[in-house]
Length: 132
Image 1 (cartoon, helix red, strand yellow):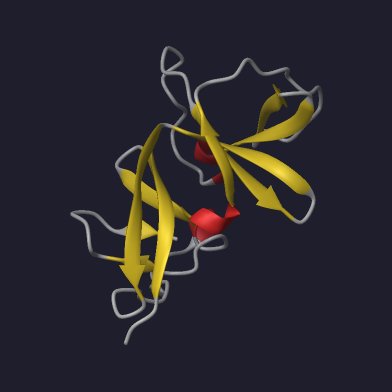
Image 2: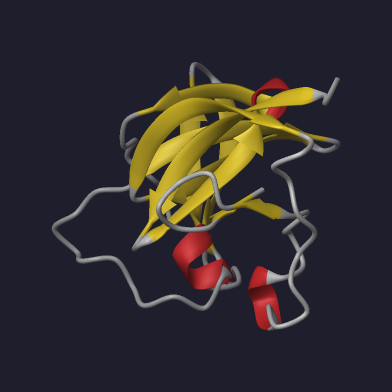
């Protein structure tokens, strides 16, 4: 019997991405950010999450995608890392989906650049390819 995993999905442009639900601490609406002088462009800023200072990473910048419309406020997917909580700035929150190991495929060799590094594989179970 194939193993089944759950992923919290989110949208960046026309792409659907997912993070394992066990890594997700919470999903929250836009939070006011404090800019960090001299920080890399991928750092969107710092947010105050109930007294905890959390670094917000702009995934559009990290993945080399066009900038978000300034009027469109990002959502936060707060994930747990080895160094603590990190917020991923995304366009829209999706659903939690179940993906069986039989649907999961390795990252294609044609995927190059900054998108490849955080990718573990994909599934074509939706209309567009979802990356996890």
